[in-house]
Length: 400
Image (cartoon, rainbow, N blue to C red; front, side, top):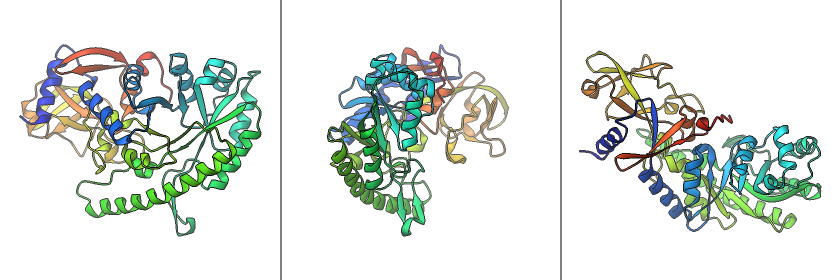
């Protein structure tokens, strides 16, 4: 029996009393992935990206482990909710235009001490001040550095279009604007190198593309390490008490941690290890989060139909954004239909061994987005469900 077949047997036994659709997290794999992230971080703390987890119980579980500290959130409403729930170090990784949220933040000393917001423009400071509604608490802010690699005099750009702050001078100028502004305190710098951390460098069947990606990433790492260090020096000249410099992601933990200027690493997808993280040479994780769909039809030889399945991930639309049939091994989509809103036909010889009511296990393309489809996660240890816990959706929250 292969390791994957053994996992399927475990998951089927553990959930035999449960009807699909359902989602699980294999805690043995989750914990092993967490330990590997800590090993790769080389002693620097890991701030957990909540968008990649979207379950408070599992955020608490990983933060209880040595080597993890703090949450990186994705909306202001989520940040405030987490802070009210007892998370005392929440970095909002994206700028917000949530005026009601800013009023709440500026009016509550507990929230103001726990939450740090992201800015990359004086306009963000203006918006926060206009939204204070009389709140006088000092707002903690973090500046985001654009990590993109610019070549040929800027005519070629590689990397996400995030912050407009690219040079040390630009970041230092905004740091001075924050320092001059009453009601704000500059506490951190963040730089997410998505073109390194979020792009697999070993694409199956694409050796030339893989080689080109590795070359690009090696160039980008060298350029960013030098520029990030210069940015940190420039900002510390303005704010000597800077608390943190956050960088990295699941795919670049060890290279980012090697930079002296970085004090903490951001990561989250490496806990669940969705399918987009199969194509990396820097690490190998264990799939920890899966979902099961029930067989509801057997249309013919070599085909079964499961209920649901049309759960695409965000990003550029393409086959790599789709969930992948995982267990039993050997199933594939019908190219004329793909995963459907209500039903999904699956082709392959394993279909002939599946009965109506059996489960087919899938892996989602991106980590936490799976939790937007399910209200609960069934936590599996060995071959038993040991707990069932709510996702954000299960607690009544769909922040985005």
